[in-house]
Amino acid sequence: MSEISRILVIGALGQIGSELTPALRQRYGADNVVAADIREAKGTPLAEDGPYEICDVTDRTRIDRLITGYKIDCIANMAALLSAVGEKVPQKCWEVNINGLVNTLEAAREHELKQVFCPSSIAVFGPNTPRDSTPQETVLEPTTMYGVTKVSGELLCHYYHLRFGVDARGLRYPGIISSETLPGGGTTDYAVEIFYKAIEDGHYDCFVREDTMLPMMYMPDCIKATMDLLAAPREKLMHRSNYNVAAISFTAGELAAEITKHLPEFTIDYKPDERQAYADSWPRTIDDRIAREEWGWTPAYDLAAMTKDMLEVLTKRQAAGALYAG
Ligand code: NAD
Ligand code: AKB
Image (cartoon, rainbow, N blue to C red; front, side, top):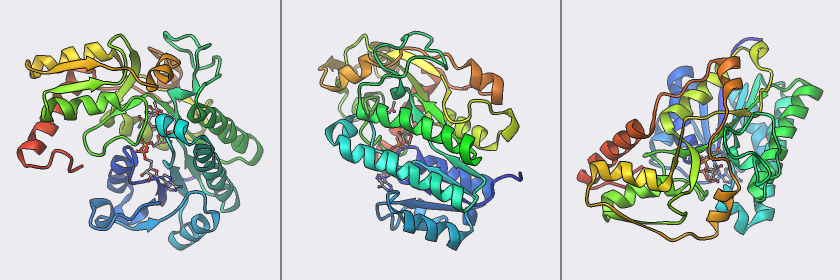
């Protein structure tokens, strides 16, 4: 089957979608990548640099219209409620994450799309999963509704591929660290907030304990992993919808120490809240050998390189009076 050429990104205004969409536009052409979200985007680069449409992922008719109108052959479904927000409104989390995914898979089946991309997460794992070097194939018994939707999503993608031949692909992203768009309400958000607060206030009240270690990834690696999986030849993919991908694992204390190398006055207090329990149920480190073998995954950023880059970008933005501009 030929490569994808016209992509609909639903949830394009989010932390990852807002950086994935420009990367896709660069590779596939600005007019060939339609950004869509439930929110207005007037005046943002995403709405100015290519087509932008309002789309609620739970509205199947709207998705059908966009597919037909723009001759879409691939959907990247980035719309979701993440772990912390999802735990506050679990029924809504199911509705958006699962009913939305079923809509995109059904649309892909009926319109014979070439591909669907839907991210999974390290939240598929739970307290009964080995926490170190967590294998690709292991116990999936999450304790958050978000995790439940991600396990179900992986299974749905697998089923639609087996039963209907839908080429549904996905990665178990770790916590994503980025400087352009603030994260949307997950447990790993502290690893982004810490940079903003370090620059803004010189101090951060961290909502997980100092010894909390989680798998993380810098946005350039996240975009690379996503673009590489989208472009990977169909026949090479044995797992397809649930690849473990690892980059960096560090404790909150190690991240703070790395920031202190650049900002020696920086201070941090640890004030764990309900998100500590979600973090404690997730892996510390991930075994991503299958992704490396099947489609050549390799990350570029370690803790030192990511920290240096984050601080450089945010310091420049603060000097321009627009720290939160992204
Ligand atoms: P985000 O919360 O930043 O963005 C989600 C976007 O979806 C938002 O722009 C929101 O407006 C939109 N949205 C919400 N409900 C919608 C609806 N009904 N219809 C259309 N759009 C809707 O999330 P993100 O961090 O960009 O995550 C993208 C995907 O990656 C999700 O599937 C998430 O589970 C997964 N993921 C993210 C991380 C991370 O650290 N960011 C880690 C693991 C997995
Ligand atoms: C969250 O913390 O909910 C997300 C994720 C790891 O899926 N960042």
